[in-house]
Image 1 (cartoon, rainbow, N blue to C red):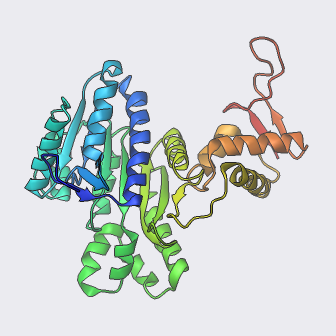
Image 2: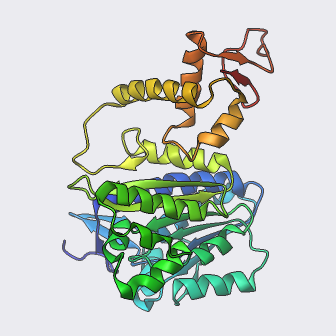
Image 3: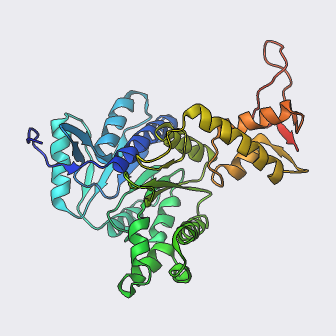
Length: 358
């Protein structure tokens, strides 16, 4: 592409585009919901160059996307959102400044030219009462310490969106030089037990181990799989960490929005199944799952959601639909705490406190 802009760009890959679409959709909602009542922070922990090119088009990275969303929502926010951009490459930070000027964004980020781990821990040391913060941790490699993620999640009402570079991690399992980094990432040496397992089972166990370690300090943790664009092989996972079920619910919705209703990106080779076909298959699957999981139990709707939102790939709307179909088929009874609507009609919807009797 002929250079017509005063800043540098990277080549835009399909899975990166999906990542940015999901991030933008979710972060906009996060700002709107929490910004009504709280001052907020956004930490872009690996700022990068901030711009990409595909053909003759220019696209922008997460620091710029975040700045645009903050500016767009400014009128409805309690206070300004503090934007922090970290990158150990000074040229990347200078490039982001050029992009902000080029786009005439009024963001005034705090730029930190330092290693991510050192920078975040210093900021957390200096700000023990940090406002709710969205941390986007999107490194090129996997030199991330789970102890730092734990500190991040101690900030009240905060969330982490983390790129878990599975492809690189898998290639380095069993390489002695990477042992210390992997111990820091997983918080233990348990990953060593998995290095000789074959293929898909190995991937499953690695992801499960990392998730179980994150669940030690975070209530809801969901991994989103992203494949290489041209093959059904995992490139990386995006882990979303939140302590409120609603955050997990909304993020799954954002992912499904850009991935044919699925909560993973399978690349360009995925089946061309329509939303309608996929939803019908999914509802039947959920009905069977709920009946087998909760046989003989009484559970409120919110209890089911909190128990299943980060344990299954199902969206809340599909769980609700499955429960309504089970009621229609006389497979369950639903006791609605409020029996009628304001207009006096018998309620058929499902609210959080309504009781499902299996």
